[in-house]
Image (cartoon, rainbow, N blue to C red):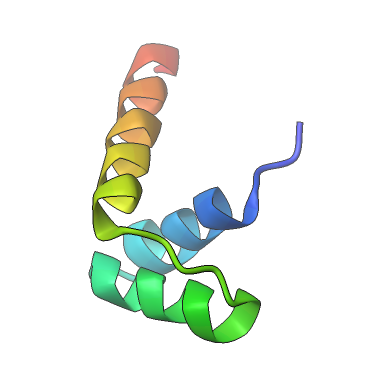
Length: 56
């Protein structure tokens, strides 16, 4: 199953490049015109981390 844009942005910008969530928000807004609340990004990030721990 292919990951959505928000998940891909979180994975590449925040987890791989070490940037903060504000830069992920700015990237999504500038490139895809997705206006997302930082709290939503934070909850998505927590969910991703928990899923990775469950798989490992």
